[in-house]
Length: 163
Image (cartoon, rainbow, N blue to C red; front, side, top):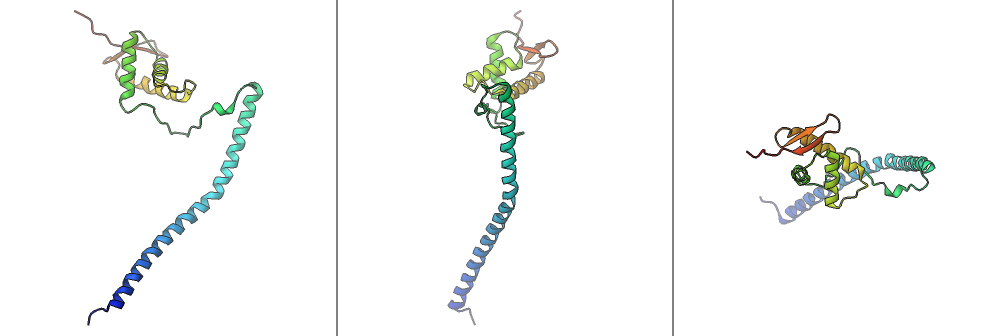
């Protein structure tokens, strides 16, 4: 004997209810995990606000004109490079060719950020780009660029000697 339409309909209802139950249980577990994270996060927020205020007071004691709002938030070990992959090296080489003179990676980084219209006060970005450029130049030393000096090396593009 086959299954009746009523039984089939009820089995479909049970299947849908079980699916909804599994979804609700998963969502409940996610919310419980979030609530467990909430209390330590609230404590950390209060702690961080106090640390920021304390550090700002120390700076203001020596420099009354200093303002905390000029400091951009930066997450540790996270940096968003303003250049697309591969563009930084090409741009740096173009600047070295244009200038035709010896430049330090920090000078090239400043020029690159100025060309982008990037915040000139953003020392973090300038240092990161300068470090990347220093590594790039070292990687291509003798091939594309040459250097002089030991510390704070200056670099320039290798020029072909006309015969």
